[in-house]
Image 1 (spheres, rainbow, N blue to C red):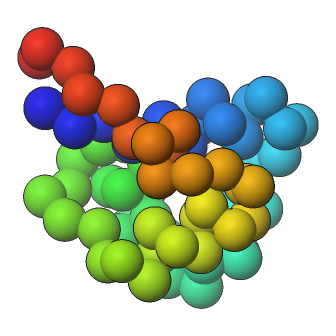
Image 2: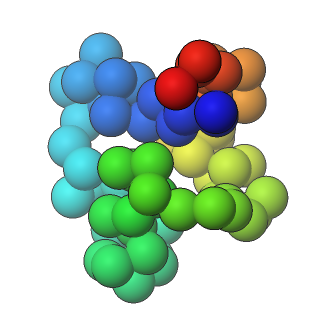
Length: 67
């Protein structure tokens, strides 16, 4: 299972979920599902934006778990 590590990256950088939510400009319901790993897909546009905002690569943004 792929897992989005955005909460960990935000914590390391001292930024909040609310900050990222405002930057992405998506609905709060979709944003919440995405950051809580409850979605089946994420648009490439959102992946790219998160990488730019958090100064990270897609490899740092995602991890694979055995769950």
